[in-house]
Length: 184
Image 1 (cartoon, rainbow, N blue to C red):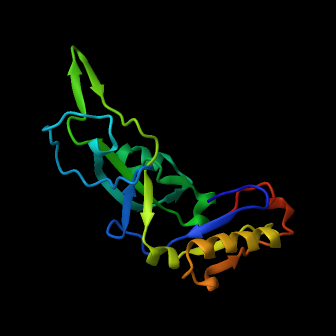
Image 2 (cartoon, rainbow, N blue to C red):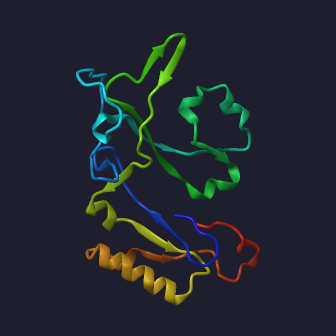
């Protein structure tokens, strides 16, 4: 999570994989993997009419030369390339491709019509084991009240959370050159 000013935290999770994470809707529906189209029912308006085709974890690549990625297949690198100035983040991202259980695209005369979900969000459900291994680092300008409040919320939500997994940032709060930046 990113934030400007003094009320920000970085949440790092270790050992995430497709096996220990679920994709859920706002209403609690768990999306399943779809291997192929199942056209026994042609519907698109319910969350249960959708599933995921691909769910993959990928490390972000950092570069000074974006043109080297232009020759590669775009869909493989969309959202996974950043400038070298961000390499300290060492990001890993989850990419999810969802599709309807039935036909994804169909013809209407000469036009191709793509179906899109009517819901806006998919949530990543993490097991309590993963949450217990998360590391929370506070923004270098976070005051004691914010830190205490954030710790209270985490410990009330995850009673087994290890308090040794709270950290203060390595960047000092007096570094005014960075004060306008979004830090993690």
